[in-house]
Length: 326
Image 1: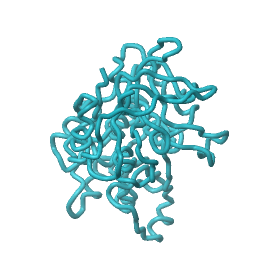
Image 2 (image 1 turned 90 degrees about the vertical axis):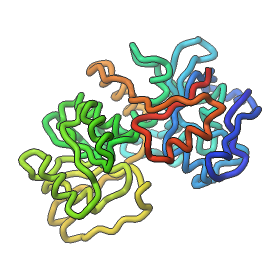
Image 3 (image 1 turned 90 degrees about the horizontal axis):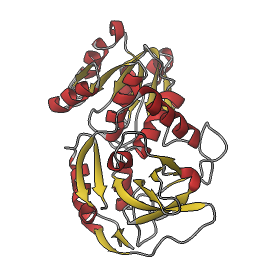
């Protein structure tokens, strides 16, 4: 088959379309003819060698297409071998595209439990953009963050797939959402998605400004931090508030002042990806609340995966970047 292959770690230009071995049959696994795949920041880290993926390698966690055994339209759920505990994944857990060939290819093979039908009314391209960010965001907001109707949510960053998905899911759940960004156009776009307001997240005192946008200016019930700005995120919480952290693109380390943390009765919660139960709950919510598909920033033909990665790393995208395999 043809696939976008990385023969070395490095910049986007290491991604090249070339022949790659077909998926090998595994009992209980299903082969999918892929119509589209979607980019995630996780793919950038794979390309850079953070996870020491075997070379040559095919990256990509998200995808949609057709089961080769039944022809059914499906989405690929990239959370493999979660395990038996909902609290956290087991020791065998992995993300598709880390050490197994991923979705930047004509075909991919995954466990049957990792396939779910495309939501009603969604295109197969839109469906490719949902699994990783949808599952990750659902778990962050509801399973781990315990967000409820009537609560307030601050989303750090207004443009990425997690942030745009968080706005839609939280609004559908009845929460009041505020976003941050240094780009006024991205704040405006997030408000069009349903956010109540937005504020820049740079300069002295921006956290105080953000707090004024919360209910009664007391701070937020929940802060979603997909970039790793812990100290600032905690400063935006109400007493007893919760901060869910699911990324570290701003910095791989964080320093906290302990006294404000424990006197504030804050919760700092880590999360990543999600379980099959989280995915079932997400799909039920999409069906029940008629959640719209993810925002697509731009589509690239599969052979132009390097250009798609450059777009992702530019920080200019709003929503998901998708590769068209057709």
